[in-house]
Image 1 (cartoon, rainbow, N blue to C red):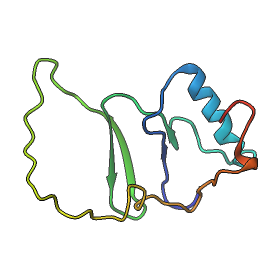
Image 2: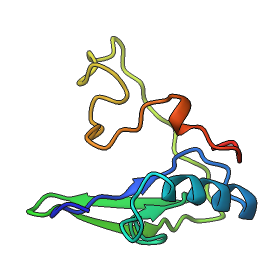
Image 3: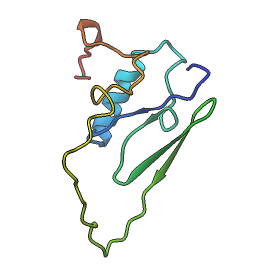
Image 4: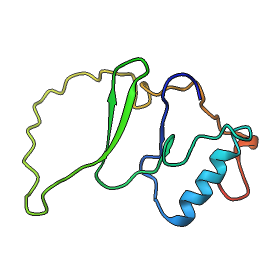
Length: 114
């Protein structure tokens, strides 16, 4: 890992014993021995009501929480005003750090499917 904090989050990932183990094995194949990110610290699997707070700083601080909502209330109605403001970024991945991006290819496929 570099001198700044990084965290990988598998969003919209079906978390189950067999999917997590398979995906973690695939992640480990991309790192030299002993350099793999630590499960539960650098790699986080999503859960309902998961909240990540990213705070500015050197290095940035990432904190993980579970949201707390009432089981007895309805969601408040949302007001949508038209016309919508133009998008702030070019696309949904424009803010992602692609420094360690693993591009698809023959060397990124594993027999276990990930």
